[in-house]
Structure formats: structure tokens, C-alpha cells
Image (cartoon, rainbow, N blue to C red; front, side):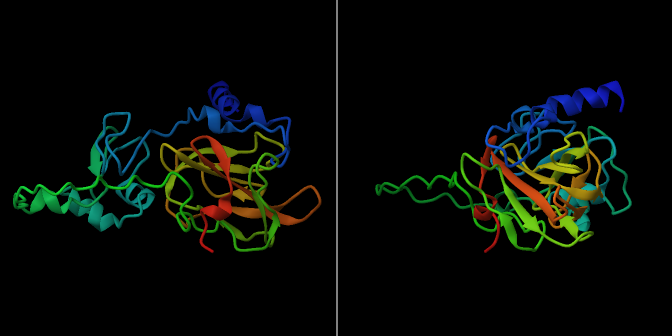
Length: 250
């Protein structure tokens, strides 16, 4: 491991080195997500790096296809929105539209007639879990549930070699074996507030910096210290552990 990579792993994961995922006193890498991935957002305003909502700044190694997949779009649509072809190269620093142009941008909207009737403000988006936002990384029995204050996620049973899939589109901010309690571990950042982690893989199918689509294979099921085939799955919202079952389809 190079000195640079060792420093990144230390910043992300060293707080976990001495504790298992289910330990009551475990700290996690979510509080220090200074990852190699850029900040990006497709809704709710401009991202911290100045790219407006619905756009993405290309990073080294990105392709039109990988960017489209990371945001759940078809590559042909992204190419059309940006005046490109499927074979067009993209360059680091280039800004791409990753969401469809809004109706308001292409169609004139008539000026509404003034009204004296007060209009209530739109309801704020729910801050809590939204059922079905994520997909199951692995279909199997829940061997260990989430218990607030005691556990940080759930353990899902499976078969050795079964594929572990990304619960949502995002970018891999860690993929490695630096935390013994987790085994081969993948951490994916989905937006500025939501992160998921997948531990106890037998092998990893992605690398740090990869853009992944929802449902894309990212690893294969391994076994725990007792030889039970399973994965450890965690969800962090605003840096805090939440019950993954609140975000997964019933």
C-alpha cells in the first residue's frame, strides 16, 4: 500500500480497526468521508463544487457510459442532452448534464392570474427513511437486525459467491481490506447525506473512484468468523446509523 493510499484509508477507516460492526462502542468512517470521489448532486441546488443541480463535473477515468450509469440514466439520453454521440470522449473538468432538461426550460409558461387567495407553501421533503429508495444488496434472511444504540446495521445471510449489489447509484469511496472486522469492504457515497457499506465479502468487484449503478454487482458473499455465509450491510444518513430495513422495499 502506498503512503498516499494508506493515509486515505486511515482517514476513512482507522476508527473501526479495533471493533466489530456490531459492537456497542464502534465508531465508523462516515464522520470523515474525505474520499477521492467528488461532491455531486442531481437535485436540490448547486453542489459544493459549483456545478448546478442536474449537472456533473467529469473526473479522471470517467466515461459517458459510467457517468450515465452512476445517475441511473441511459447513456444515449446523456449524450443527446449534451450534444454528443455514444462514442464521444469526455475530459476531466468537462460539465455534463445528467438530468433531463426541465419542461420550464423548453416551454413558455403563461403568467398566472393574480389571486388574493393565500397559497400554502410546499411541504418539506421528509427527513426520515423512504421505503424503497434502496434495493436489497443481497436477498436472504436477516441474521442480525438493527438495534439502535447497539448495532450499526444488519447481517444478511446468503450463499458463498452470491453477488452483492449496490443498493443505489453512487461512487465507491472505499474498497479494500484495511478493517479486519469487516473483511473485504465496499463503501458507496450516494449523495451528500446518504452512504452505504457492504462488509464481509469474499472478493470485491469494484475499485475506489468507480461510479456504480443501482443493482450493479460490487462484491461476492463471504463468511463470518463462524463460517456463516453472509454480508454486513449498513446505511448512514447525515453521518448517523439508521435501520436499513426502513430504506429497503418490503
